[in-house]
Length: 291
Image 1 (cartoon, rainbow, N blue to C red):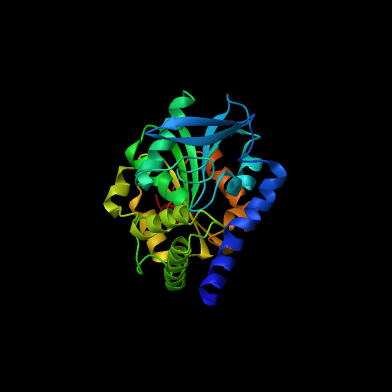
Image 2 (cartoon, helix red, strand yellow; image 1 turned 90 degrees about the vertical axis):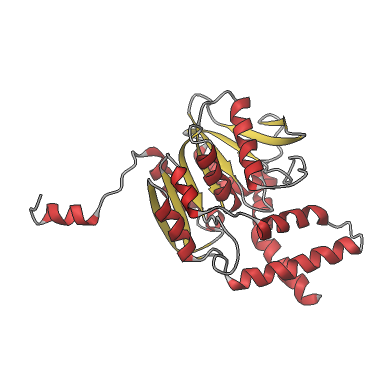
């Protein structure tokens, strides 16, 4: 039990505490002037908006067990030039529950937010689970996503996709969650934690061929020491028709926080520039004078 609790505490501190500490200073995720509760499919989602509504809309989507506060560095950076839309994913933060939580359900929630704001489409930037949701939005609602940044996503599960140490941690954490539910512990909402952990274990299950449905330009981002295996990220990139790939050096799965300056700069470069995919062969032929 001590070992399990140690895993939980270290993971929780890395994933949540740093974001919440910043959040307490900036009130992102708890801003009545910027926030709204939207009724969706027998539940509700909470979202906030920042910046000039006449600017290009940009949806920010956080990862598993996160909240609006997790995107603090991106809100601060992008609200100056974009109309930033940032929500709590279903069963997270101030958003409501779901009978069965799925990534497709959450993707639909963000489309409902666009409808509520009367916006035809938007740029989307998602991290981890947010990256998965972004990919599904681009596949299922191709006319609603005009550009997508999908950072450290996975579209399948298992040991071919996820690092072994993370799979081991996940199993240990599930045991902790189950034991806390059994003990009627009230220090946290353990039933909600179980929902989040079960989601990651069971989903997503998206065939690579489905990625070919994506019409918009996509920037796939990862780190050189990530939870998602490099081969899986590369496969995602290779199956998207119009995609670019960025591997951040000296970074981890949590680069939106720990390396936010470079993350935001590369994201902005992609969003603000025309999409291009220069070919090394073509450049070489030009350099040596062969057309």
